[in-house]
Image (tube, rainbow, N blue to C red; front, side, top):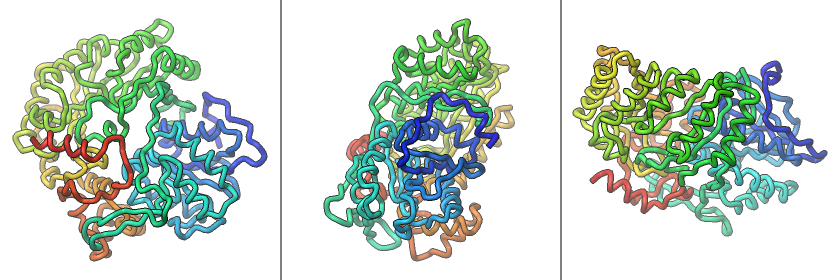
Length: 532
């Protein structure tokens, strides 16, 4: 328990009523990873602040004292491949992996988080209940409705919960396939009175989330995190973080951010400002000035990815004074043509200017995020990325340059959900590595093979569930996926179908019954604009 003793709580848990609902809230990874997840912290504190809930936390390496007869078991899933740890934890608790095998004596297993909100279908069999969207209002509504049917039979509970907006009960929906190795015919409720479409829930308040616990045992030691913005106004066509979480929302500086920061800096001097595009907060300058007061001069400040044309010398100076060595910007490509395709409104001059400002402000390094295999990309576009980085290296000597590079993976609810992974991506990563390292640029590619698996899960339907289980059985390596596909041949479409194939915009998507912020017609329009 020494790990938990290191926690400094920023809230006071409620005194639990005698008949409080016994809940286990799990994170399918180690404590240091889970407790660094702002989403996990916020949901845990929401549960702990309710007097009608008795919550215990569970991680893969440690746990609090767990109730003997939990009624609810929740998982927060923020990385696809953590599904293996969900199955391991269910097994350790003697709970069947599949919802249909659970009885009245088992808890209802619920899940939420970005992975399940995007496309829960590959994991649908493992969950009785899936919460789609922002937890702020959704979690309380789920618990309030659960209390009403707490003593009802399992089936009745699920049917009642299916009426709550944003609550998805996978077992109440049937997926009909054209044939077992091709597309989906339709997805429909199994019984009448169940909604045909479930709408992701969007929290629209101007108080966003902040850390509820600070600990030296977190992966980011002693960090206090504050969410400055949610979603992103840029809407790059591949970006799940933008499209799935629309609209772009900003926290109030006076009413929310400053009080939150003051609370956190009472217990730590390490502050992280989070959001997909933090510097696009309309009052970001005022927030920076607040943090830059003399009383906070010993505060270590870090900022998640910022928009390139907002990297000013002043921003770099303040970050440098507050112990930051580098700043991170997402450029995606050195080719302006490719950036037009993805709707990245950015010119190479602005990227060079950001590098100059970073150095002038005292930062030692600039980290860039790039991508290969973007739809429409050719070899000349990869060459353009090399040229751009060489120009930055020559134009801003002494600034350490890093390019982190991933492969394009199609994500649900984005305009590029219909497009497959480019099989040339692996060669393009290798080419970048060869070119950039010889010029003293630190190149950090993500594994192409794991990107293929990510695409499989990202676009997967319920037919890949047995494949995921077999892979776990075979040892969770890249070879395990190939072996599992071979064994299940004829029982599901080939890997090519899920990963590399371009899908028709008229075909039924695995997540067709789960509505994101924008209608399909708008996504198709954005796709056509990109293709033009």
